[in-house]
Length: 360
Image 1 (cartoon, rainbow, N blue to C red):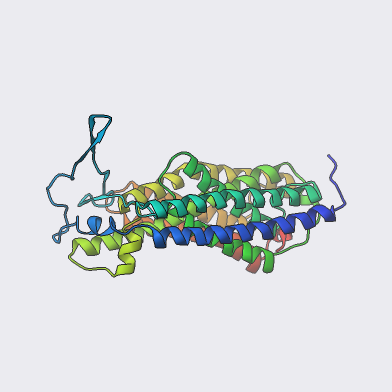
Image 2: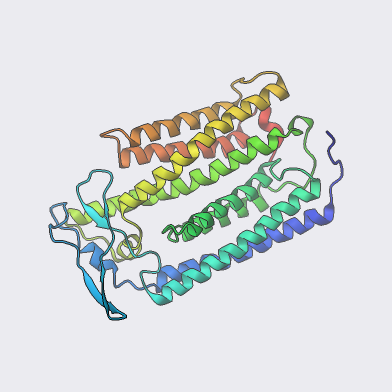
């Protein structure tokens, strides 16, 4: 099996230009998402807040039913109600979304999604150009991993949107962190396009690292859902106890899905990708045997990959265990994602080991 030894500087320069262009479009998308939150109607917000009684439970009153005429036929419209997963003590309807149910806010939201799609396409082209410049997989160092990771994370978000999931509320948080990730990549982590060391010349580079990137992107989406769940759960608890959150908290948190929906969303995405993370570790062990003559050597990268696996396994177990559902399990999920982040950034930058050849 032969590998190219020259670097196509034109394609490498094109890749850099495309990444910077993607950042510019992501910035426009960021402002569009901000506009969706700011200019979306807040008229539905107070309605949900007032729906919680002060004794910590929903009133026994049935949800309101409205009737409209459609071609001479009466159509019943009932609000969607979600049961709170953590304690089952109250039922809370999902919020109207970032646009607040307002037509103008929805317009800004659709513009934001369109810009996100455009930025994703430009960034993907930049990743492909980077790969073509050296004729290999575009994740041979931390810079390439970062740009590929952010591309996949946005791709996961767009796939969820295409599946008609109510996840547009995720857009602002996603694009904010993507911009931070790309900013870190092009400044601190940038590495000139170059060939790999011999140990990385393996088809396992395509298998092992690509699955690690996909797992990280999905874990990230799950972590965002978990953080928002914790905020929303605290907000609902405060309302149920008769508290009065501030205007900002009301205008933002009431537009999000109910805490039960966020909890379920985070659990589902983490549970769905956990088997793939298991495969990633196994694939890495197989590659290690081929490259270094042993399946497992407790290298720092291997160790933290295993710690991450254990942490997510504990989360999935806690999530299905009475007394550990809800906030306790959510904290474990955030610890698990923190382990994944340290495995990538902390181990690569601060800890030596056989994986250090990847460089920054």
